[in-house]
Amino acid sequence: MCNPMAIGLAGLGGGILQGIGGFMQRKQAAASNEINAAGVERDIGAEREATAYTVARTREGIARTQGSARAGYAANGLALSGSAADVIRDTAIEGDLDIAAIKWSSDEKIKSMKFQAQGYRYNAAQEKAAAPISFLSGVLGGAAKFGGAFG
Image (cartoon, rainbow, N blue to C red; front, top):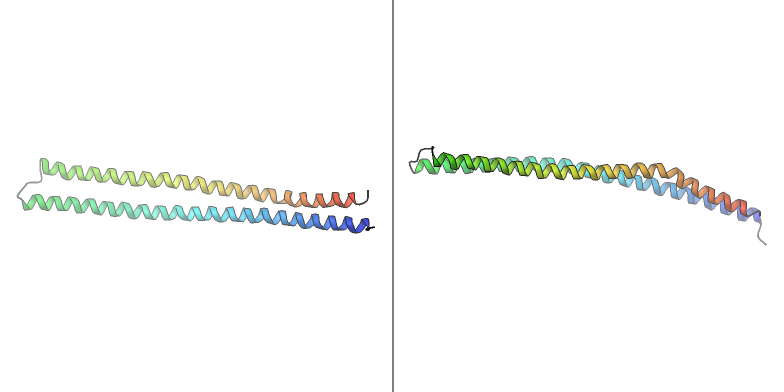
């Protein structure tokens, strides 16, 4: 017959190891969520930079289009008034609308990314809070096995 003390100690030891494993698993999950949040926050910065670049390139394109139109009108002896001026003004208005759409789209994307990062941070906090409970759960289970070994 097996020694009840040895069985009890084995159960207690296993419970402690299980508790440590549960604790470490929760800590690892929290760290993973923190890394994911940091990655999303880095992506927010990249999105802002990409948007600034796209806006700058769009402005350059508008300026080139307007410059070409002015040069074309001048080459043909047309004054920059009336319909010619309207076309150049409309080009500027359309360009401003394009820029507004680019910025709006980027802002919406950034809002979504911030929400995602916030979710990761929340999950990390929950995992950190659950880590001690995971440890105690394993230890208490082991203690119950230890107590059960005696009867």
